[in-house]
Length: 295
Image 1: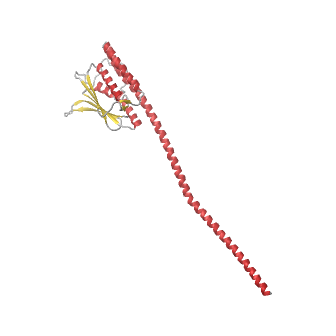
Image 2: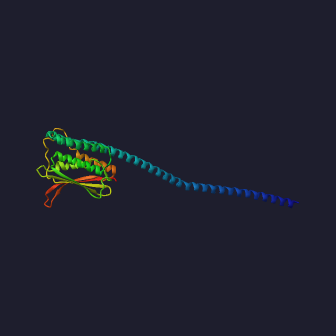
């Protein structure tokens, strides 16, 4: 009886001890699992931090690039607007300079009492002024219109100077003057320079040749040659003796070309040089003008 009770007690103690050990093991296992879960979560968190930082950096770079692109676009638009305003201002300065020279010629006819010549001159002058007024607000004009205006101007100067010079305008066959468009009123001051400073007044007939051709796929080239070998003195009837006049023509053209280069990203420019023979004697002047064009 005693042995049976002892055996039963030992069994109960064993079961109780086993249960406690099992509970302890379960608790330890649960703790290990929780620890592992925490480690896994921590590892995932550490792994996600670089991803989040990298993604945030990419978003920041994209945002900054778009912001800088928008800023550059606005800056470019502002510069274009400013360049166009400067271009209009320069054109408005060139026109009075050009008109003054024509009025000077009309004054010559009045001075010499040649009413018929004055009437003929006024008709051509009105045609020329119409061209100036129509093109002063235009960004580009056809080469045909610009050449026609140059011919009109040279005819006016021929009348004023009693046919002291001859002129010829040659357009290369590769150019369609109706399709090519160039900035207006840029060639006239160089023609004026050849007439006023390049044509001799010593009895020798002056000659002016104007040659137009394609320089490259973005520019046309105009070469103006004359046979003048000495400066021309002002005549007594020249209005610049009595009217204050600054030599603006070439100076304004230089400024306008700089603005055009900014506006069109072009390489407009000009070069003045002497024409020499083999003996290094001056035969005349040559002006090479490069202008952007559009089809």
